[in-house]
Image 1 (tube, rainbow, N blue to C red):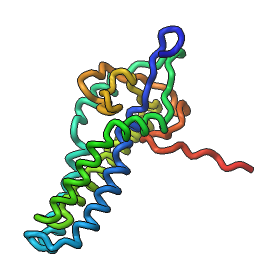
Image 2 (image 1 turned 180 degrees about the horizontal axis):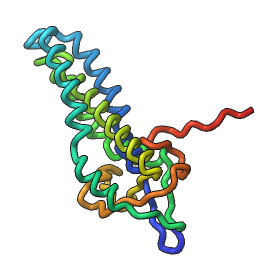
Image 3 (image 1 turned 90 degrees about the horizontal axis):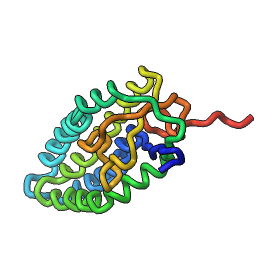
Length: 195
């Protein structure tokens, strides 16, 4: 908690994007290892099934709860001067620590599925990571259009540092686009090169 009744705020796009890289790379590794296993269906069918999952998964993940995000964005209020903005690295670390066992289980499941359908589980995992990146990019476009960054109260996120559009989240706060250390969409903010 901040002085004067302020709240700790985490960037919505950063929380969404936090899982994209781990899911992508775990999926790539699982698919790469899985393609070495002949599997029940054979490699060709496994890779084709994986390709279909890789196309469908990002669309599904990127569109999940979009209506809820839109409603929260529409009712966002300005952050107060005593609110504390969480660093990007802290939000990412909290999400990844909170989901580490889930990520490990998903990776093992993707590897195990290769014995039935080679590479498909890994490609599905990578597709989910791509979907989170697409959702973060959509949030970034909304932030640029509104000329405001979106923040959620840290104490409204779930115990694992995620679900920025969950039931516990009552609304978003906004700041100017220069606030915090992350660019619109949750990526690292690029600093100007020193002369």
